[in-house]
Image 1: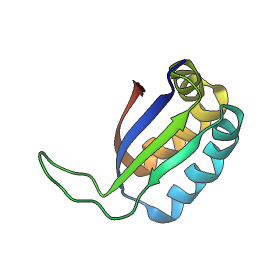
Image 2: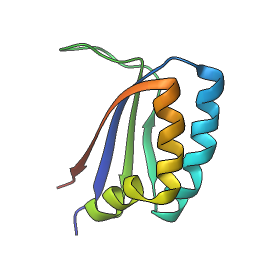
Image 3: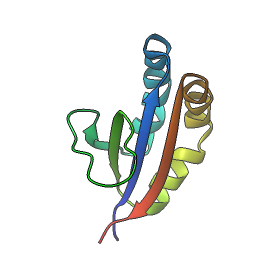
Image 4: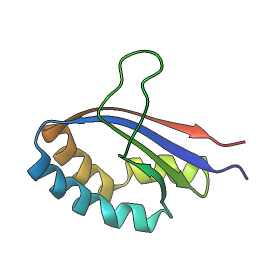
Length: 95
């Protein structure tokens, strides 16, 4: 079964309160087997408009990745994130 990956591009408007999102999201990530492959850090903008923070999270499957996002645990965190950051997020299936 192929793994699933969240790819998120984020501009944080309120770094102090973004910490609340990180803490709130942790239970969902633990529940669904999230493995962070990239979480911020240096990047090189090649095409298009980049955001300041780029995150890649590996899950055991595409379904785990989607279920994590839709979980009640993560939706609490998402509500916090949406107040303090702008983001694009997609889930992709690995090969």
